[in-house]
Amino acid sequence: MKKNLHPAYRPIVFRDPSVGFAFLTRSTLTSDRTIEWEDGRTYPVVDVDVSSASHPFYTGRGRILDTAGRVERFKQRYGKM
Image 1 (cartoon, rainbow, N blue to C red):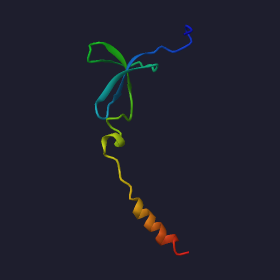
Image 2 (image 1 turned 30 degrees about the horizontal axis):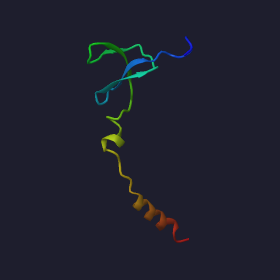
Image 3 (image 1 turned 60 degrees about the vertical axis):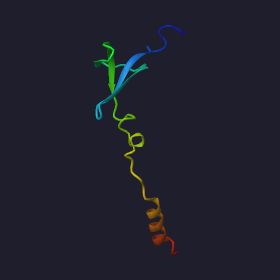
């Protein structure tokens, strides 16, 4: 790779503060805030709004849409034309 062309690829912690979930991975993102990880080292931390621990699709707390009721209402309104 050419020097000074690509951003630095380093370990970083992504944290979802709404559920207290965090994971260590590698990324090119930067952050001024840091956190001490389980291994005793300090890493930059990026707070995210949604993660697999808080997203309704992964947690099973998603809403089930009543598509049959919507179709029936549509047919009642516009099916008699």
